[in-house]
Length: 221
Image (cartoon, rainbow, N blue to C red; front, side, top):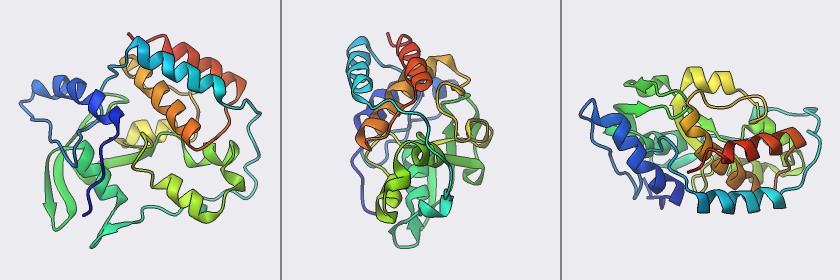
């Protein structure tokens, strides 16, 4: 599997995940130059940068869902051999990960949204930080299929995260104005990552969404 450089958000979160897993004597597994994300360790400087990015985002009403289909965001695409982007995220975010070829068959994952510890990769969901349907309503409806595929498989930004199935299903396609992680100490990093993705992909935000993100950034130390 070709390596992917670790974004800074993964590196910032490594220390927090180590704290979460120390009690069970797990070692944080550094994969492809990074490690799994955990509780927020954002600081005031990071929050300031995120606020500046947020202020640059276009505010608009949510667009129509007409024509939307997950099939218009092809995922998970091949990452070499018989592996795909899902395997890449599982390997990156897990500890003590075991492989069969390049497929992830075992390991431990701590879901940053609710703190759940998962020991079966088949029970781990890969969450899109900005959900595909939300992206559709905020600009992706006008993209071509290649751009939507790139968005759905984005490993360069904090767009893909291994989490518990229950938290992922609870989140659905909601934005931060109607859904936030159960763990409030994850709110700072969640807001920063959401803003980073929306800014990178030039997606819009609603007034309520921007207000919620501003409030969440106040959690940053």
